[in-house]
Image 1 (cartoon, rainbow, N blue to C red):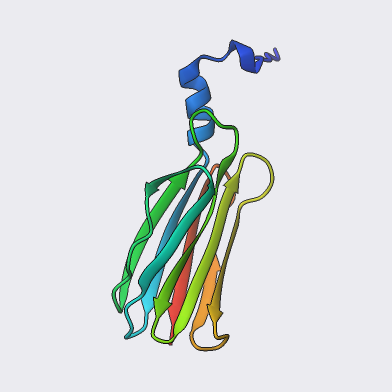
Image 2: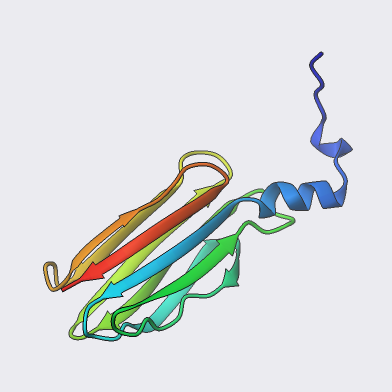
Length: 132
């Protein structure tokens, strides 16, 4: 038996669960002797559950964002850190429609080795690595 429910038939709590389930749970791993100092963080969509923070040398830090309860948008954002004379920028997303995404860049290029990976589904569990 197939059952279709119109959005207008959902309760406010069910709608909240529908959008807040779209999350990014990120881990930033600093494998260098330099601390990473947060310079900015911004969400184009969604809300912070835990904002990005400084990442001490040879340490990890976590951040998380999710879709807003009243907005069918998922979550998408960016964060930037200063590390030594370089700037690390990450981008991440878990949209309502489409594929999850994550990226990392270092400026100037080559100052540090950077990499990232993430998952699909309602929770983009992404990790970002910074190495000397």
